[in-house]
Image (cartoon, rainbow, N blue to C red; front, side, top):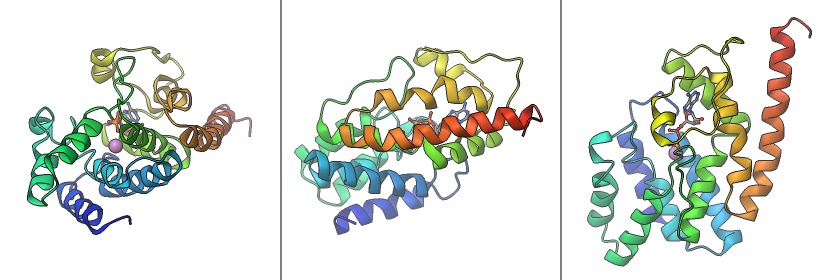
Length: 214
Ligand code: ADP
Ligand code: NI
């Protein structure tokens, strides 16, 4: 890992997520951190800002810690206690504030570090890991895997996206298959290509098995 401070931020995130089973767990944070640092190298982004933003990107997440989402109190507390300079703290908090997927209301991060973290977070929602996370999330929320009678709802804004209760297969059309085209960096686009192909192959196999054809 890039620096001991990023390692400390990961430990802090681990303690915060101890009890989560919805796919927003510590290992998600760890994967996002590794991927974000890989992207930062290719994109010549600041590794410390990228790594710390990635390590802390879910610390005040809307689902995990709704009471601190606005203030980002958890991320802020870590950065203060670890002597991160105020300007650096601001750059990290800005990147974190721009990461989240909000349907058609998602924002393009204003900095290259934010772009690397957002791309890394989105890469973790697609491919083999993304498939596993989607079904884990669906199970944790009591959603059916698939219902051929329910059509996916595309192009939802933030309010609609948050209120929506999809089947997990529909979630692929409502979010996951859109992510490849939404990557900010070339490095992430290249990684998304293969992961997207893998998800499409998965769906094709899923429908064939569903119909008893394979
Ligand atoms: P973000 O990390 O951008 O905040 P979310 O909180 O929407 O994204 O999603 C976290 C994980 O849970 C992702 O892997 C996502 O695909 C999955 N997920 C979110 N909503 C659903 C859903 N309705 N059905 C299945 N998986 C979901
Ligand atoms: Ni995340």
